[in-house]
Length: 469
Image (tube, rainbow, N blue to C red; front, side):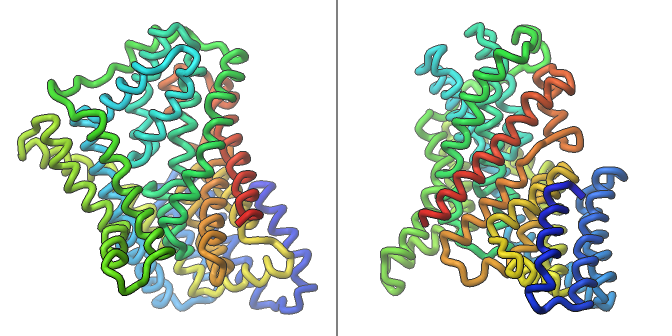
């Protein structure tokens, strides 16, 4: 168990007897929770078992140690899995469809070219953050890396800039969205587990992401590029070739509009809840189209028409593009679903309430506790999504009754912790290492340091917003 997580739990335990309600049953539940997490960590990190199976076995361990009847344990896990897949899995699938449409029709490349035409060598790192943020909204981190690295290599080569000065800002923009902003799987799972408002979480997530991406992107990229020397970008051009784009591509405006449409619709729902009467026509419309599944479904349907027409794709080709987006995210949906099953096991076993009581006795806020737990699981397992789901399940009872903005900030704090210190047990670490042609040591100094800076900076911003809101 990582030092940060074990230290926070030790602090909680030290305060538990004074809290007045500590019993042998609570001890058993605490052991059950730690055993479940330990099984997940060992199976993912040491046994290299798929996270879906690891989460299922971790939930089983937790339930057995907590004394749940096995039949209840199975039904609890499957109930949590089904609910999470129903709530989150559909959004993940729709996000994958939108990302695939943007990529294959050439809309993503249109955005990149248009932005780069309007930048100078001095502003290139800032432009890369903007490009990564736009393209990262509907795409998973790994897809965004594969898409952006050829662009980073070509831009660095043509401008004669160090690879890291261009690449770190792009990676920072992608990674912070992956950790904090729906419709990425981690933030969606946190919103679902904590039952907080998606629109408010999205808006605050974007607000937190801006200063965080600036610090860990252009500023850190310029700093580290002078200290870690990589081969010229021309050496990597042979590894990273941009796929041939369609002869005809959608316009810049159309591509950006498709990226921002679900964000606008979901924010419209939150605005309606604040400003309009519930029985008004405007409220009913905004509430319906701003429901996350409806917003994403509408966007995908409109994108099929707008982007497909812009690229002059046939109906058969569009069907292939949309269908081709699904196989790659099947594993992600299963992992998120298993995380929902683990969370439900935490709830039904009584671990959630026990952790809430302990945290209250130790005077730990859900913001701090959620961040620390996510940091510990992230460092141990290497999975941001597993860290987010597990931490959200543990602190969920502490969020009940909080104002909407505070609940959203807890979800963001958990997402922030899930970004901490990506290292050799994280697939993203090796992906970045290979694409940028770095050694393990160079990747630790650049990518791992950037991820830690993202986590610490975003958490500091979240704490500041919590004090204000």
